[in-house]
Image (tube, rainbow, N blue to C red; front, side, top):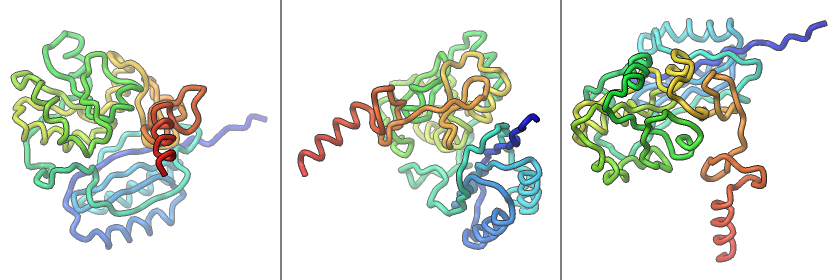
Length: 276
């Protein structure tokens, strides 16, 4: 007898929209999730919502149908990936101060006018050798795991520290188009306006992020894996999950000889312990 594993649909999406009644909205979403067999996370902030969920197709369809009844979240765009294992072990619904923390209180999504570049158009730009800057807005450990052939990075340890990279940004030419990208797009919603504020006037954001690019192009011009913030750890250019053990501190992939911490972080911990 064939033992077929269940197929789960994993969805991820976000929307920046004002939410004035955070606690009421939080309560409604908690109630909705409690009645469904789904796992994952929903984060609410006064600036919007960020969702990552996993469940069977019927449960996810029910969730999306209920979500659509709220005009603020109607017709949200979601990435959809399928798997035989759930990438989440629990259900979290909570509020945050910001969906994407960044240490610039003056920056508000929607105040600027960056453009969205469809994945197939980015592929065409890369195919044709167009002269532009392709800027990876993710953390350094994500860049090391995988990125585009032509991509540059800011060596960010934490995205919230984007303001500390003023010198690196000043070294980038402002007379060329600049295309920002991240996993699903949410970080670029703040990175792109920040670049406009910084003086770049041809700012694009990869529409749908890396995941949508991989879906539409099958990984052309991409090398390595894409880090995802759930139990899968990463996905390949074919969108298949591939697990790695990561350093507890810096999130770099551990070598076979390393346990819990990479060599550098272990050394730092040992030095700190020695001073206690």
